Image (cartoon, rainbow, N blue to C red; front, side, top):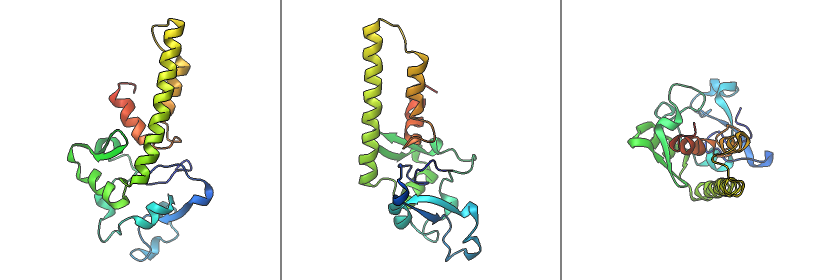
Length: 167
């Protein structure tokens, strides 16, 4: 379901780096301890650092499994830094609950942005070298692949691609 990414921060995880997490804490809802809809794959940092539901309720945060509140409506990015879009309460609570503004995540996001930038530069250089007025269908697919769910930090790229008018 999470494409081998942390359910919360979207970084790619090796099997040994992830843990099964209870979205709603077992201490608060023991009846959901083995409910599939309450289990997710998370990195250790998100699992251990997330704020308890008693402090920041799940209802105040984004749920990536529903289509009611789209993350891109509540979260934005300035370079590698995650921000609440237009002061969205759900966006800011989501960032706070899961500590999505951790320095480690900023570093990992900037690495992905550099990879994206290298791809765009290579496409542009090839386009100029070949004297083409636009990009090929394959090049467009490569660019859009950064926003696909299986890609690390796909939400960040979905936001950027939308801002650039690619989607």
